[in-house]
Image 1 (cartoon, rainbow, N blue to C red):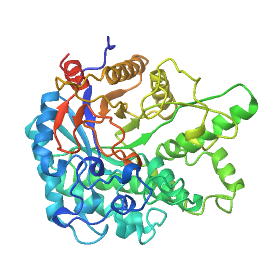
Image 2 (image 1 turned 180 degrees about the vertical axis):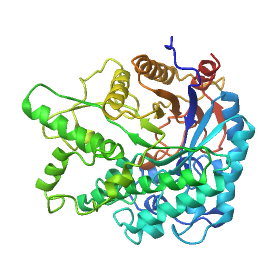
Image 3 (image 1 turned 60 degrees about the horizontal axis):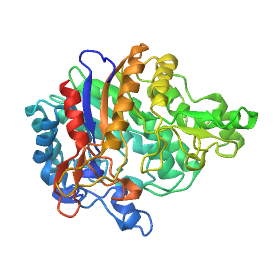
Image 4 (image 1 turned 120 degrees about the vertical axis):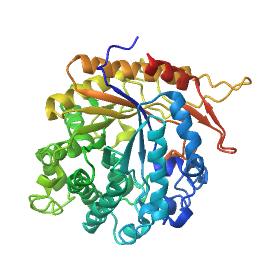
Length: 449
């Protein structure tokens, strides 16, 4: 039984452009860093690419009709920068922009509120060839792109997210090499993170100017942590990991600047010279902290951190060999209570006016049985427990006003290719056939109720 949530609570689903659209070069679109990355040998499981993905670019009307059956209030999707401005900063491609124009109209015609995200990791390769996010010029290119898109769609789309998960875009892309563009360099990752945040802050007033009644936010993914023990070394490791993974991104957005303990550690570890990071120029922090209307929080799991793993997410100590909630097929412990606790922490520490859980979901590989039905009871249990955690946070006074399931349908899971399935809708990647899972029908009943 889900606890009570406020009247007007928004139920939604989320996707991203590269993961579902396919047809990456159609109608004049340019090359993104993911188009390049997937063609680099050994980067993606099975050699998979997003060239077809879910074929959403050609099956958009069919997919929106399924969303209407589901009954969601909101659809959170991302826009492919390369469809709109193929080289990232020059001529606008009206044919690419038209796809999102039609998507917004189709959503509204079906009673679904569009919530576009401007950036979900698919930087134009032409900008990466000029240095990508570590270069300050990319901020200017993004602000121009935000201006173009919000001007075109803002008469109808009122809810906007600037960036999705800047930690992933910067750290997995420029530090760990697991995501595009596949670099491994602290001195690229830190300025990349800074410029992602700066481009967010500079875009907020642009979007507001273009969109009457705009609601603008940013989505930050979180990884709540606890120390492996009360040993001082474990406590210190957990504190640093929290700064590396969470505070380095939350603090600047809410006007606190970069956390001093992490600045000192990064300097001591040789990641920049001088008292302050050289990429943090005068006035940047004020722009990054542009007031937002809501904060998006993405949550999947939590982590126990031990000494020696203060920046290594994959090798942190799991909370016991068999956590009470089990694991998803990503290997992530299922810890819904940590979501409630983190939402309360965000409310207490930063005080956003509104919070939306913009992604939450689980990978389980359940497939259609002989009768065609997908019995994904584990996903239903995961979603139910996490929605209950959201309701628990709301009961504690946290202004959480929406919850979006990741994902609407199975898709291309980045460097894991098609090996993981997060969707409410099963996608046969050979034929493109869509099959609503039991979780789809469960979520539809929950929304109606």
